[in-house]
Length: 353
Image 1 (spheres, rainbow, N blue to C red):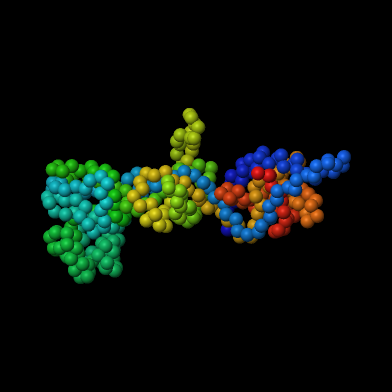
Image 2 (image 1 turned 90 degrees about the vertical axis):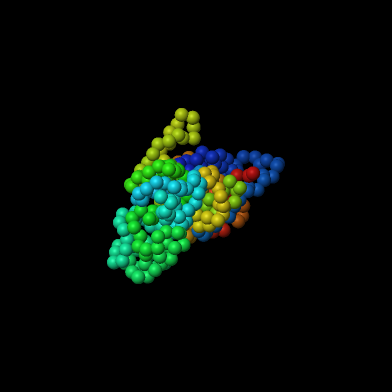
């Protein structure tokens, strides 16, 4: 289903202002003919096909944080003294040793539910399911298979091999993480319930501060093309659109702009290698029409009585004004959907270069 851009009105006004001078291209009639032969007008064909509309904006490529931009927090549940801590910039995978308390490993495991209880035979729930997923065991029950897989992991990590997971032996985070801050300090007491590490997820994403007026145009699932600092492009998809606007500095000195945060996931994260906090350009496709009549934006002229038109060149060379209504704009290719007494293959006048 097509979602028309609400910036069409502003764009259409710009079109009228830009190409209103196209009115001077009207067919000469009456008076004395000049001895010089008029130059044939530049024309473009009216086409029919799919037209997409994009919103173009600046973004920042980095590691995934919470939708509001805040870091993820790892909360310690182990008692003792911090004897090993990660450093800023370290990446820790799920199933690996995260830090040590009393020289005993605390694991990083994948899952959205924080650790809140001991896990052993007979336990059931979401926390058990995510433990099983880390151990490649199915179900939401702590079974004999869970215990066997857990003992194997404990042995690999140099932990007491018990086949149980006491509270404090693991911290659950959504996916593998990248450390961006360390709140704990070596040699100090590890307080239960205290933050030990601030982290982003190891997954890459692009953050965009979208003009709040365009919020209704962008939806989760919209396709995105991302232009990287070296001018290569990589595809992505909108995964989150904020609901709360925030005010920040605008493009002009002393101006403010109200924006909505938008997050974009990358289809090919390998394309961005080790880029971090890199400026990028994003083109979000926000609407499409399958069978649109399409003309160049520069062929559209404003009518004195209001509205818009194009100047069609007939097969015999005569030129006529055809009123049109404007639809979807493709801001990237400079084309616009029109409706009116036109057909695919008609020729319309465009300004000479």
